[in-house]
Amino acid sequence: MSEWISDNIIEIFGAVTGILYVFLEIRQNILLWPLGILTSAVYMYVFRDNGFYAGMVLQGYYLVISIYGWWEWRKAVPGKGQVTGSKGNVVSVADDPKTPGIRRLDKKAALTCLAFTLILWALLWYSLDRWTDSPVPLWDSIITSLSVVATWMLTHKILEQWHVWIIANSIAAIVYLSTGMYPTAVLFIVYLVMAVVGLREWRKDLRQNYRSYQG
Image (cartoon, rainbow, N blue to C red; front, side):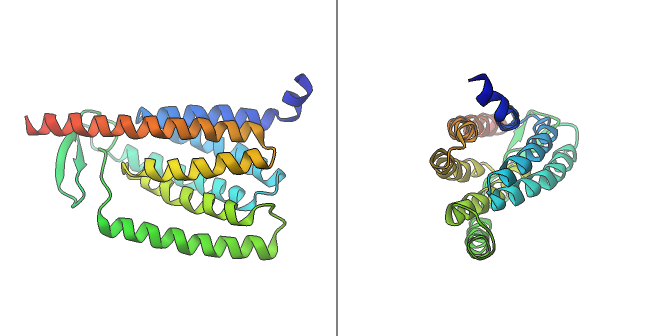
């Protein structure tokens, strides 16, 4: 057991920081972004070492967009942040002065996200299948495409990001279990559970803030 831990210590460390990242995400704590930078750097190495090249590129994207997300959340003006509805109208006022309010995804943005996901999936699948030795090019590209879109949604605090994460994490957990990446598989199972919790918590915050605004 100790030998296995020693052989997989970097992956285990990444799994632990990844769980802390999602916990901070649920709490809407801005510290999730610097922790995300650390987690992404670790997993760039882990995925490269296991032949998950799309996953490695995804972690590079996470690292960059974590810097953007940190900047975007810090832009919030001190005071109460707005929570916007599906048509862009203000539906409530957030109590946290440090972060922007939760938003809903409108139809136009939803269609754009769907189209981008499908195009990225096709491009990644073709590239991985043709030019790499990835063991699961189809699934690696699906996980990556969904995660790219979900992370962009997180930077803008869009509630529906949790739906995308639930799908992506479910697929990832099965794929990593099947390829023997057990610490990472456990991480994504935890991610899946926490995504369900996050969806519930963000919905609750949205309802509470809406009632506060109406009152």
